[in-house]
Image 1 (cartoon, rainbow, N blue to C red):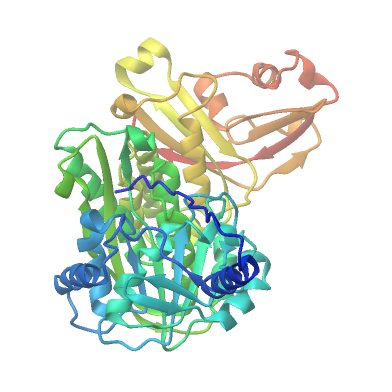
Image 2 (cartoon, helix red, strand yellow):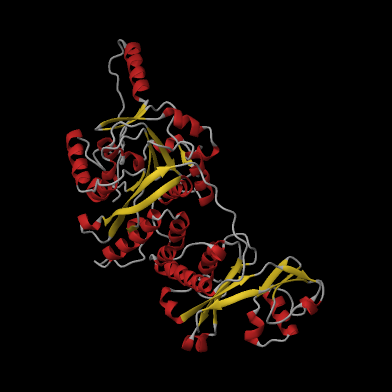
Length: 523
């Protein structure tokens, strides 16, 4: 659980002017030497400031973990106050005990500075200190990264940041004073940049390298401006289930499923960016397996259900290897029936996760490999239709959004379209309470092709994109079938959808047609 820290700045009052030059020189020398060691910022707040007490607590937490099997080469661990997250951190770090790494790369989120990419310590910093001693900085590795555009975040982001520091006593107790590469990852780091960062880090990993990603999971309560769930005792099991689903995508080395679950749900996983960097590194330069070591919540200690944080620990055992580039996306073909079912389930899981903030999307990724047409670049529309009595009262269409261009894999395109369809501006925003009253339909589009005129449009077969005077509008092929419109009525309605006069299609309009494979839930 987060702690509020207050920092005070003491001033030196020199009451005696004698020997002032000597005193100033001594102070300057002392500050210069100590400035090379990053002092602990949260000792005495997040963890004990007394070395003996700190060592006892850490070893107690580690003692509850499992050490059997191969030592991990990567770890995800929480960074909250030890009273709340120490037990989970201990289970995450315990398998490292007795191993002898030669370098530890630590990735943590920035809680105080906004930027994209990685922020490295100042070049003069030689070590990070805790009450247990100092962890030397691998200055050669930091210098190599500092030359790269992906690691140009502000060094000042390191000064107050606790997400790296809180992991250090666990490392000191398990692997000793190993050289570290401390990296604060900015919240503005997207998946493309995370992959680029991972590719750079792949040049540093190898036998003897351990990578730690520091993150707490869901932050729930008014203090975090995130309250999708009730605050009674049902909250604990809800947060545990959500964290287990999300952490499970990390353990499966599924950067896509992990990122999409968090983005669709709006989950408050503070270290989502550093975890994504780690997962991209694992996906491209690792052979092995991951496992969730523990999941817990702060309320198990505090009993406070008004402000709760979830924690997860994950281990990855295996070996590092050279970077493997992603394969080119496959060419799209007609979807098979199992693929159709998977896509409809994906759209439904996305809506459920987006509206209920739970782990349905992560669970979909756990059950479905992203391969074949799911990985092919495709244009797609997701339609949400009212069904039953709701359709008779309010009309069938509840939302329909998509993209004509095949610029991303079908799995991403469906997720994006489903989230957008829940917020179709033509209708009130879809509510979680409506999920049982609507049916999902998906239209996977063929590539666009221009036609010479309206006479080349085949109603019921072709979807149509109309463009005129800088305005555009599209109808899917099933619109003509469902409405029974003739061609003139179809194109007049399409013109009006584009914000044009009903007869604007008759001159100066450009038409592009496409076909669609349409499938969905019964309604």
